[in-house]
Image (cartoon, rainbow, N blue to C red; front, top):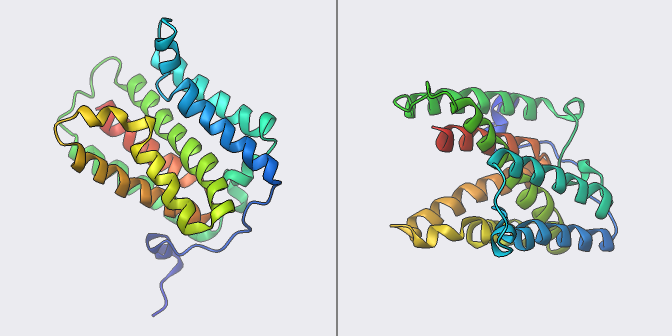
Length: 224
């Protein structure tokens, strides 16, 4: 049975793209950049807390993380952003474009129905949603763009996707869930969602899709 191309994305059937190629030294620098962002500085700027310094506003933190991540990839690792999955729209296939638009529409409709009782009329709702959209986008840039790209290059697809998702699920990004009421269920959900994003990034070769999808989910769930 042949699947129509406008439905192929839902089965993660994308046209193959050339895998990133860059020197091993650049890959090591990419890993070092990831560790600087997530371990040294910390996704929630825990370095400032350890140093006894005040935390900046959330929008400042997320913009700083995004800017620093991009700068580290381009200027420190010396890797083009396309190598970590930021593909220009003109280079997307019909399958990618169709799936991207479909998911954006479906996700926004579903989230709007699910959280329709939330306080959307609050004065700061738009700002909070925007910050959380960027927060979800940054997570994909760090874990699926920087970390997974290098791990899959070194160890292959299966190991790379799984190792990156383990770090995403159980690393510093989600430590705080250990103190929650049901950490096992929470970590299982995070792992499953992260695995989808990891597979989508690998099968499509496109980081924009998981980054935007994650951002939309974070904007609706955390913003509402």
